[in-house]
Length: 134
Image 1 (cartoon, helix red, strand yellow):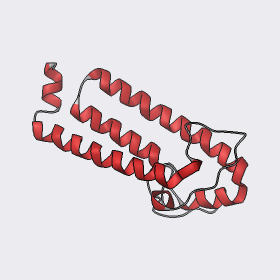
Image 2 (spheres, helix red, strand yellow):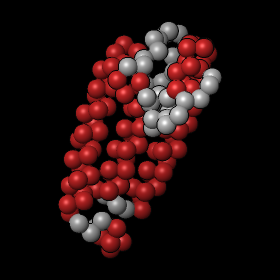
Image 3 (spheres, helix red, strand yellow):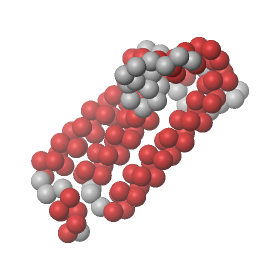
């Protein structure tokens, strides 16, 4: 491990904590996939109409799977604190933001006012403290 990595994460306990958090985040991701059911897919599908899922973590966050993915990446950086991992994490966060925006455009077209109301009351990646009007 490079010297700067040892300085950034000097305690093995921190890495273990990050690993335990990663396992918990993965379990939450599996729960989100189960909640999505047949509506879950890797990308936007123009041919298939999907339901608007608003239960579970989706009740307060529009993209909990992306949020959990970002948090998993931060755990990975904590476990392997190297410059390449930091670069990968920055790229990952950027791509998740772009993917979420693309998905939101699709959901607005597909679900119209229902999605606008849902978006106004939920946060993109973290729960919204106050709701906005659509």
